[in-house]
Length: 211
Image (cartoon, rainbow, N blue to C red; front, side, top):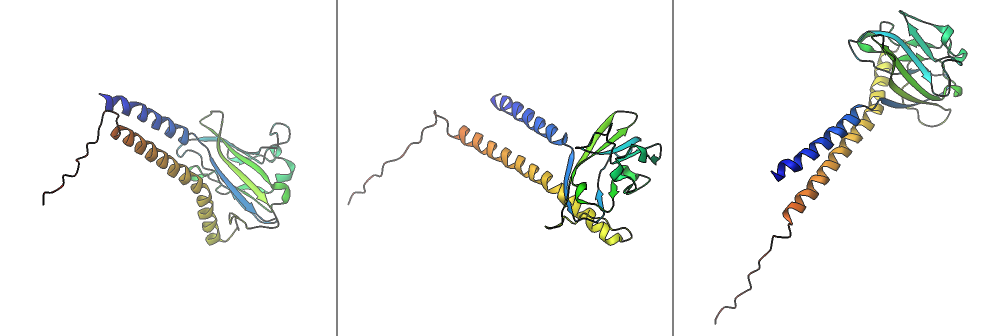
């Protein structure tokens, strides 16, 4: 009976941790050089009808300043874009197959540095945040290899792999951390259950042998 009482809170705690973990949106960090093209990747739920797509930058108000990219009714609307992004943003897959709503930002400049958010309208519902991308454009330093060169399929595949690694590393780190915490808690409980106060250790005194 005591074992069942002990298992229930542990199970509830584990489920809460799992729910919190799954509720996180995907985030990525990308560093590129001026003049390059960069792919801002975003994935919406597969099989869901996308009614609209909007990419925004956190320091710009989409209602007054405009957004990075806006797509609705099978076409993009430059009228809703910030002037600095007009003519420089396009869907990586115009058909958005399998929920791919990534966009390509061309000929980046230092002014493109910022936090980009991908918001998707699915089945006539309100916008849902899918991905947050932290983009840094700099002349110096190592780039993350997430640039997109049109017409070069091999390079595009490498970029997608690198981007997946960038996103996957934080996720793997969280999973490993959760496993370590569970292992430590289980070990502590195991030690406590073995070392009960009512348990006594008896020692047998050595009996000298007769000569």
